Image (tube, rainbow, N blue to C red; front, side, top):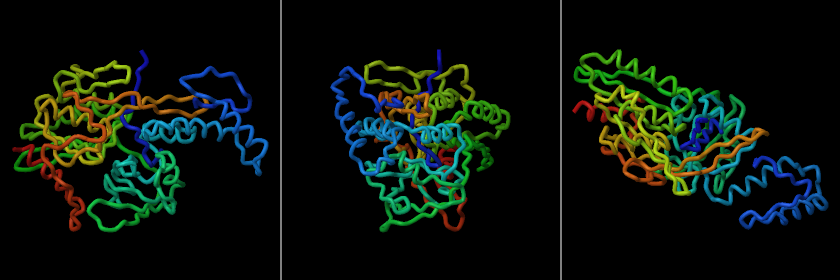
Length: 391
């Protein structure tokens, strides 16, 4: 059976991110499909072709894609999108973990363009951009009503060039501008660092996104932890902060090393058919290790599903801030011309039946991140996580 990778997040990274091709040049007989009437489409096409002043601007390819985009946008679902060949190429590069841009994962907060998460060691991260920041302008373009694809195209550009974002952050009185220089972005799937406190060694596992590379990296990392932990091992801090998600199966792979058995997440479709994603019991390599999980407003989709499952099974306490709240699943489809579509086909349910969409997952111990100007490397959330772990 062909493995289907349902994207838990439309994670149009900005580092970013036809029904391909209605035939508009020739009228064809189309059966009525759920009330769809194409006669107006043909009429407008003919009127433009015969009357529009500058006929050189009538591009059949752009019309094709514009018609399809308009149809999809009537759903008012920012995560169901049609992608032109260039947009689709950018999205596929993103999922592979390598692309160009400034390092921001995009989403929406109350229909306002927002930073879902800044990616580590990128221009946005270095400039202090935070998850939850609202993007009000891209250069001089207002973002009211903007689509994710359009925002991505505006923020992307040649490496070495700059883009200015006008932003708003909760708690700040005024808006502020951030100027970012575009660069090539390579996002690692994860990192391991060892921390020591009170004579105990703690494994700090930072998962940046659930990309294809994780399928290879995670098993190797688990083996490394088991080889190096030693007799004074204090436990694991699984850091999912600013992890925008990715492939659901990758999060199931990670969860299967911490949870012994059971359903990690359920896909609930509109047709009433539910698909349960169960723990892979052939993994189970970190079952007996103490652990806590770090989350924040940039933990989205597959990341918050994993965090919610670990919390639901009482496997780990969550430390930090409420997660983003992205609980729908998109199925990607590529077309022969290079374009593609992501369609919201289902919602995700945690083991307790809760859907996290728009509400997120609450931490067990709430800790707001507080930047330390004297020591930029200081991390009060990580310090609290280690404290809770060693108790």
